[in-house]
Length: 83
Image 1 (cartoon, rainbow, N blue to C red):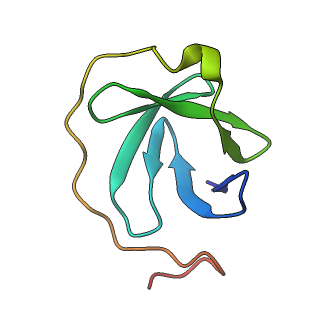
Image 2: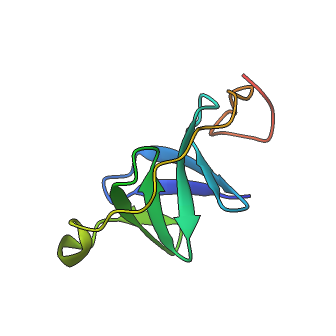
């Protein structure tokens, strides 16, 4: 499980298996390979070297919607402990 950042240097969240969680513990997306899709099925981006990037040519992609998992305890971006 590693942190995922935007190109602008903002912490987006972390990956746990095929799930994407924000740092507050919300299930915000699912992975299909390196591509990430939101709860409503929209393409969010893809992961390259722990960065969430958007491939402009893929922005029209959609996948099936899904129900998010329950909220988890938040995680600190500065260590492996809950906030």
